[in-house]
Amino acid sequence: PGVVVSLWKVDDETTALLMARFHQYITNGYSTSESLAYAQRDLIHQSFTPEGNSGIKIINLTPSLQSIASKNSKVRSESPYYWAPFVIIGNGFIK
Image (cartoon, rainbow, N blue to C red; front, side, top):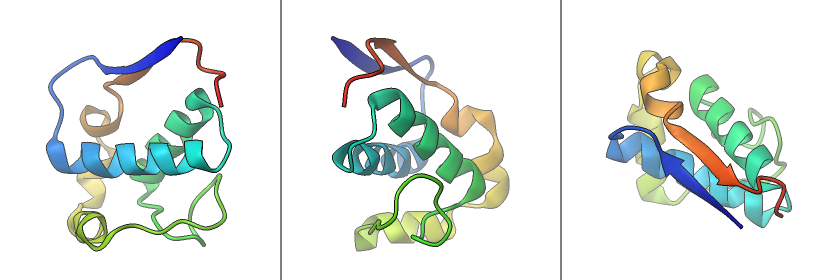
């Protein structure tokens, strides 16, 4: 009933991090639209720890994603080029 799509060519590393967060939120019971919004905000604010995230209490990144998060620059994360290409087409209220 819904898909997440990219509106333009995306950066592999930040997309991997964004999608990992997106799926972690879904796994924790958030709808697809909430999950995408929270994951995008986490990327913008570099909130990849349980203390810093906005919508989920416990979150763990794999070592490879943790290395991407640690080298991801703040300027890069804040740029809409990296977090804004993703939209949900269809039903965003699915949990």
